[in-house]
Image 1 (cartoon, rainbow, N blue to C red):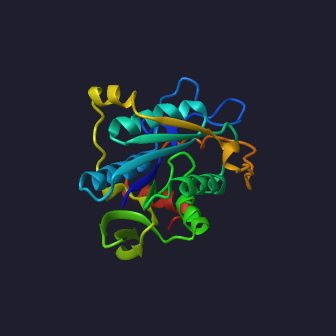
Image 2 (spheres, rainbow, N blue to C red):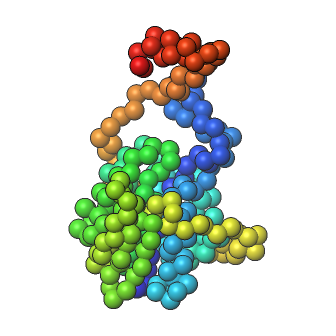
Length: 249
């Protein structure tokens, strides 16, 4: 296999407490730490391990979004990716828009494997990988907790409701990474310096012939209601009475 294409989405860091803007128009991002979506980071780590085993020759990272997403692509390059592509768009994009953009890049790069995180922690849609496979007309293996490549096929262990499921798909294919697939490596300072010299291409979304047209429009954001204070009871009888009043027993 020559190329592996990995998607990296820019998202609010998972350690940051998400805050809704005062006007309800979206999530506050000014001055907020942004990072690679954690599931995408796992997907990149798996691609790097495949290359290190000699089963691929090049790892390409792709992000779709504003110019600021170059920061996350540089982190991907510091982890070990060979080159990066930013499809620049300031428009609001839904999962189908992203899948169509991914497909346009797939047509250009012809990778033998596309690796994505199973979902993004900002919208939790879990749709882009499946939609890309459908548009591309290639097999998909989602929620991967183990991945092995052999004889032009990918053997994937998936985490499903009933436990673990192992399937085999022909390559090229789309695989989405689950949490237990691996543990991403730490980025070291020398690797950050090397990443500055690696190629990062910026492509305006219009150059791909894809016109974003979100099917859904978000009209308002609101934070969850604060948790109510608990009730202290002195005896088991008081506990039973409280539960009865709430209709729980």
